[in-house]
Image (tube, rainbow, N blue to C red; front, side):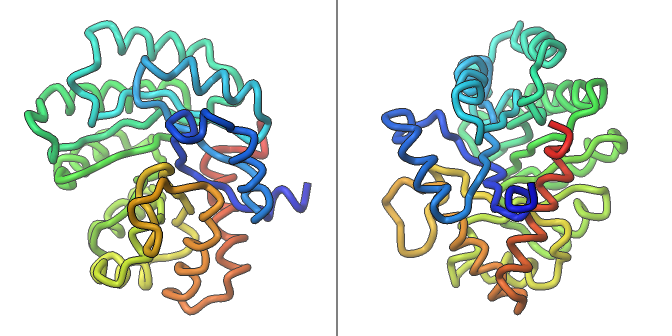
Amino acid sequence: MKKEANSLIDSHCHFDFPPFLDDPGHYLLEAQKVGVSMLIVPAIGRSNGEQIASLSETFAQIRYALGLHPYYIHSHCDNDLSWLETALAERDDKCVAVGECGLDFAIENPKNEQQLYLLEQQLALAEAHNLPVILHCRKAHNELIRILNRFKGVNGVLHAFSGSYEQGKALIDRGWFLGIGGTITYERARKTREAVKKLPLDAMLLETDSPDMPLFGYQGQANLPSRLPLVAQMLAQLKQQDVEKVKHQTTQNSRRLFRLDKK
């Protein structure tokens, strides 16, 4: 158990997207070779909820979350919330969170009011089922904070953190974690790098968002969970801390948030 507790966890990986489904065992083995022992795979909606649950049955390294992603607001149907409520009520112990959900006002015709409603309903479901939440947010930080203020009993992780120190602290002060990924590997991401330097390590999770968010030097390629150690190395460099300490702390953070030691 000790080795598993100290190995890396990719807290956000869309492992049901290409290229992974061509040979999932291969990509899991490549990740395992570099110390990545577990992936958290969030749903984007009803369309792939069953698929990621099936992946978790096939591969012991996979846990998953169920939710309605705001980027796909135009694909969600009126009864998808009912589906989600039923799926969460009937979930197995490999379902560790509600998500991916949130707000994305950067997309074309974002349907802001519908996005706000779906997020509120999903936070209510997380509260009812005592589950953490995997959040997505673009161009909607203030609206997100206003909603979270109404759900003080809910916590989770804002994945793909790319904000300022003030934005990060506002979430951490509310008991939330920050998902740290490929953004910090780019020198041009000065605001986020400076924020990460100052914000506490015990509020950070490592993630790749594979196959998206390629790391610097891998632009144009599918991102892979096996590149998670490179994120850990950059985080250690920014925080001027030993990389093994960073790996250990972020893994413990993931285990605590998703209650993995109880699964």
